[in-house]
Image 1 (cartoon, rainbow, N blue to C red):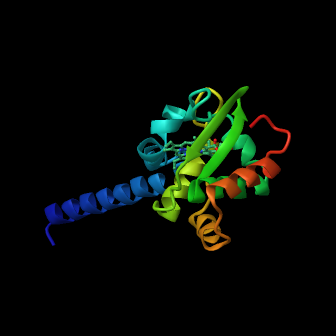
Image 2 (cartoon, rainbow, N blue to C red):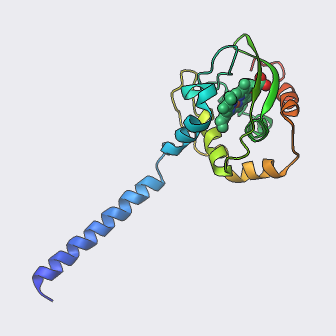
Length: 168
Ligand code: HEC
């Protein structure tokens, strides 16, 4: 083999190592993949507004609230059911009543729903993202999907027992 060819092969090998290193760096990135925000922006922000800011009296703020709801097992289970089954009924958020209807998002995949929930629980009150890693997995969503089917009014009743005494 000519020295020239050896040098070229070494160059290619180094390039391959670099490519592998870059893709590994991607896999272990601590930041949320862009698609978490994208799932939210494409499906939820039309009502809940960008970064989950909400609209008082119409759509509940999620920023700085979803993380608190998700702090308990019951709260996480409630959030899974809101997105799967929707919710209808009066709630009070930030001192304003909302008599709203949230549609079911059961048509989205388990991983998209997990991504949307992971996104909202990473938002602080001002909408900045503090990525918490995977709080919801596609398996969690699959389990809720396969479990008892709730009407939007039943999800509202579940909210009342789950968030008892909390102004949302
Ligand atoms: C068409 C408007 C609309 C869209 C789109 C929508 N929501 Fe909602 N969402 C609402 C309304 C209205 C409520 C309050 C329902 C009620 O009053 O019972 C709500 C409630 C919620 C709640 C419960 C808040 C609480 O205080 O308990 C969560 C969590 C939520 N939405 C997340 C999402 C996510 C995630 C998406 C996207 C996958 C989404 N929503 C899409 C309108 C919407």
